[in-house]
Length: 125
Image (cartoon, rainbow, N blue to C red; front, side, top):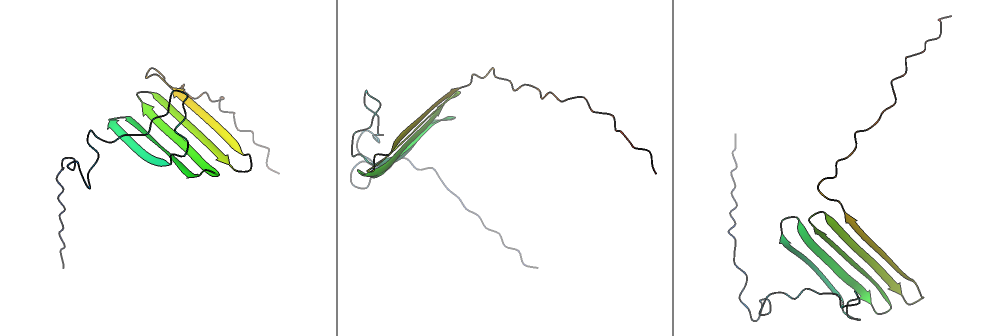
């Protein structure tokens, strides 16, 4: 018979050096909303940030000035936040905001079932 063996090795690399082809000096600047919760008008972006275990955020704004969509999600500890906004040139606009916070003391309740009914048999004919 034939035997095929393969191996793949990967070694962690440090961040690329600053300058051409590398990130800007001082790290990556993630888009942040202003004091009113809005991103700067006309900024279209996409990003993800995972700074620690069980902590992340990601978001984007795509489209053009006449038709666009913006979404942002974040999770830290037991808090999940989400925002979705859209706009079109025909007057359509919508916003959804979610903020879930479940402490680690939450325990799902045991399911409650009705008692099992005794079978009812009809006499044979």
